[in-house]
Image (cartoon, rainbow, N blue to C red; front, side, top):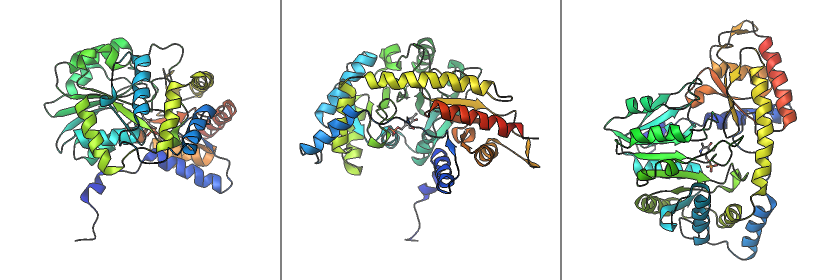
Length: 399
Ligand SMILES: Cc1ncc(COP(=O)(O)O)c(C=O)c1O
């Protein structure tokens, strides 16, 4: 059967977040005024000084291949920024820069997981984690967390999920889709459990600089430095610096892991785009004022949306510590009827909100959390106010 596709294609689901965004774009193209709350990206432009660094790089002819893992200036900038943020002492041998944090995670999945391995993924999870695990032939072991626990895995849950087959645990703090972040004490308690199980600890900290109200964001590497030879940090510029389209992310971790990731990348993509690398050097080493400005805007929006959601009957969400998502319990509305038709689950409810309220939100099922929707507040205050009004009105029509 020479013309069949590889069996592993069947292991992968299309990205649900991408699908919702696409449906919203289609409706917009038809002239329908859709408000999108589905995006996973800041609505700001990349700060001008960062864009200027890329233009300068192009003008200086920095447009050729580089080392697969990135130019030395970028590796140094990544290490220096991590030192400021987390007090780490990583060197160039500990870093690989890739085409976004998603690519970093995919590289790591291919390098670390074997068929039959188990990888612990707390839910609600970022959509790509279980998919990438499955693609390698490993099995995601999903640990369900609750709003009452702040959508954070407890040490007891972690202990119960660990088996001799556990190859890795993936944490995301602050989290997409919940915005929840682990406190230092919570990380310490998880680290105590992990101390007795020899597995990799992957921590996605791409939202690590987007935390609110002085939340004391800590990296697991600061809290449990004794686990350094098993901790792999995943990070990038997409969210912090409004650089989603530039496609640069990186891993920081043991040199042996970085070496194998670099080898894989050298056969797959080679380096991330060269001028973009120079933009990231500027993002990490230049002035950080733009980050503070964006954070101030997100802080106001967070408050607006969280209070607004909780004021709508049958909806509830917690005040997230970070990121820009309000993960909302909509279960009180599941099972109600729209024009005589029962909305059976969060997917149908999100579909109803798109058609009736013309608001695009992502169903929680996509994140392993049925009965919820993810509402992104990476949009203007005016849009949030109008969206909440429309959602309340549409829900009010349900029988
Ligand atoms: C938790 C998390 N990790 C990784 C990524 C991917 O980031 P990048 O755009 O750098 O690939 C995202 C983007 O949505 C994310 O939310």
